[in-house]
Amino acid sequence: MNSEAASRIFADRLLALDRLEAERMFKQETEQHSPVQLIEYLIVPALEDIGRRWEQGETALAQVYMSSRICEELVARFLPLSSPEKINQPKLGIALLDDYHALGKIIVCAALRASGWEFHDYGRMTAPELAERVVQDQISVLLISTLMLRSALQIKELKTLLNAAQSPVKIVVGGAPFRFDPQLWQEVGADATGNNATEAVQAVARCMEELKK
Image 1 (cartoon, rainbow, N blue to C red):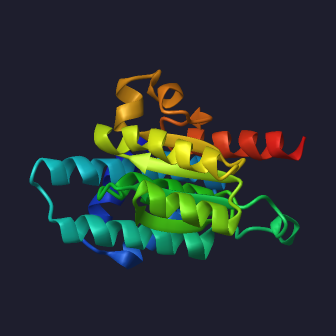
Image 2 (cartoon, rainbow, N blue to C red):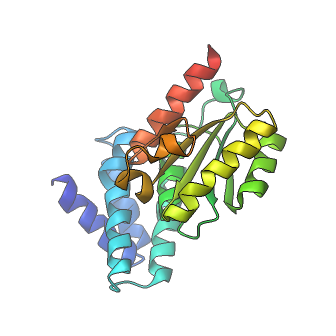
Image 3 (cartoon, helix red, strand yellow):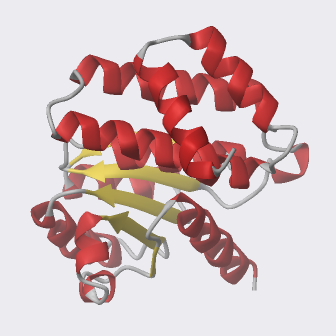
């Protein structure tokens, strides 16, 4: 079965809230794909498909939410947890910057968990609130997911606040505004960007390596 067909079947099972069949398919695929490959092969396209159906009025918001929750539960249950060696890894955070669209963040969170990263999930915050928490928690790498351009542009304010607090945090951004404008991530002062969950995880890994130097 090709990846497109597999993700479509998986999406249908999620929308039907058929946890048993979704779990059976997910478990079967873990025998053939590595954790990050499985996220990109099955979960990401399935959730993106569900998101498109919601935008077109074909599914209910409750189905989108429950589909995401089922995916998170499956990732937590079947994919490797962070190893003991990573207990002292630099602190990682993820947030929505004054944006209510959480689907992208949910996908990235799933990919991070699948890759063994531990992180603080700050949910939705304003720039001042997020800057305060980043400094307080001594976050080293911060991921920000946005769907709206207005939210993406607020990263400039966040960066200014973090610089004023002398925080050395590296910022990784992603979402529609950064796909539409490939230079936007640099304009708002981010350190890296990712067009999908795999690229986001790779960007985090690069930032972590730079921090160790």
